[in-house]
Amino acid sequence: MTTSQTPDKTAKPAREVRNEADRVLIFDTTLRDGEQSPGASMTLEEKLQVAEMLDEMGVDIIEAGFPIASNGDFQAVSEISKIVKNAVVAGLARAGFKDIDRAGEAVQGAERPRVHTFISTSPVHMKFKLQMEPSEVLDAVSKSVERARSYTNDVEWSPEDATRTETDFLCRCVEAAIKAGATTINIPDTVGYFVPDEYKALLEMLRERVPGADEVVFSTHCHNDLGMAVANSLAGVAAGARQVECTINGIGERAGNASLEEVVMAINTRNDVLPYWTGIDTTLITRASKLVAGVTAFPVQYNKAIVGKNAFAHESGIHQDGMLKHTQTYEIMTPEDVGLKESSLVMGKHSGRHAFREKLKELGYELGENAFQDAFQRFKDLADKKKHVFDEDIEALVDDEMATADHIKVVALTVIAGTGGPQKATITLEVDGKHETREASGDGPVDATFNAIKAIVPHDARLPLYQVHAVTEGTDAQAEVSVRLEEAGKTVTGRGADTDTMVASARAYVSALNKLIVKREKTAPEKMMAS
Ligand code: KIV
Ligand code: ZN
Image 1: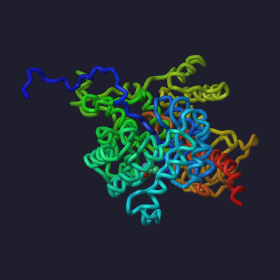
Image 2 (image 1 turned 135 degrees about the vertical axis):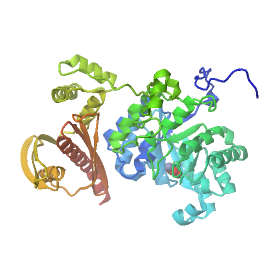
Image 3 (image 1 turned 135 degrees about the horizontal axis):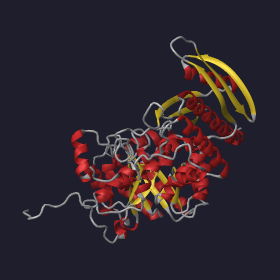
Image 4 (image 1 turned 180 degrees about the horizontal axis):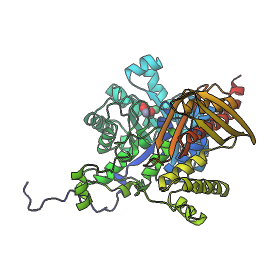
């Protein structure tokens, strides 16, 4: 083809009138598949925070959990169902009636409830995992979907391990699910095995061959074992799928799920070749990413597309020179598109309550009066210690403040560290209103601090994670510490921030202990029911 004009590949296409047929529904499963990844468990309060964030950013369907898994999961799904304003709320269930009933009950309070039921259809899963004959699985498909329809008209059905399922059998299962009343058919690449061409062909084949396929929404659910989850999801969309299942930061089982931010920004940025649209407010992506990374203590890899620390950083001289001349030389989307703002200097120690309240609003926080006063005091203390207080400092401080429950508080800490040893810590905690002080030694100052805390609050929890990162640059940066504790199969993550790494560590450990206490209280009725 010859053309007299070179097409401007950097120009954004004018947003045409949006056609409903091109809309891709975003189904977020951060709270279910994401939370299933080892160590990513969240407390009820954290799940509610994430659900509110997803709803605000325009996610169409929020998979809130797997209600049969535990009383805690059931409670989370039902509480989320009550607070979500716009999105459909889905509860996951296996094919058994007990599972489906539990999911159906959990989503009853939602404005728009969905039950998502699944069963494995691949030979290896049917034989070894389910120990069921294909005919029994086929029968269970119809029965499970019918049962789910008795709770809601919005029923999604998934053949687990669909991509390793024998084609004719998959067609028969999908047909049975549609006949029984499923309104969404999800095709999981459960083990992340497929490549885009194969996944596209599978979706095309199903849409062509299965009677009734044109009456349902087809959905993608791709895992990232070979790093192709997003590419496979987009290939599924090209084949006619109009729902994509994904997670914030791509968290999920093993290598994770397709990442929401990558799917959405690919569609937005390359709309010339991906002529679809979503309802996501992309300017909330960075906030959502930080929230999920924070509550799960799963750090986002620096070079992760869209939300990694370096995703918009230009280091080499040639690139910086190009950027200064024209940002489109090296930028295919802007940091503002995903809500990443220039790190801005916050008011100094002379700033008043009004300015601080405005800053919190700008950063997306709404605090009650008491929490606001506490946060303001901590901001003042920080401004006294630290020359420059940045947005990130305020975020770390408020996240820390919001995460702190009331049972135990850090009052004072003194640490002796250095090469001489032994390292020692003396800590004063307020435990249910009473002050207690202990001294302990340890293998380093953190160990000594944690031993002193443990002397006041004895427990048997394991500590599978201790993680520190600097909130901003410079030696006066705040340290943000995450501590994960695990007790009797329950996992909690606490966070703490301070310019003193030891104080931040003590706060994180105490925050995790507070969460553990709440978890113990909540699980007590469960234990009683079981006995
Ligand atoms: O990966 C998978 O197959 C799933 C199903 C439950 C949808 O998560
Ligand atoms: Zn999955």
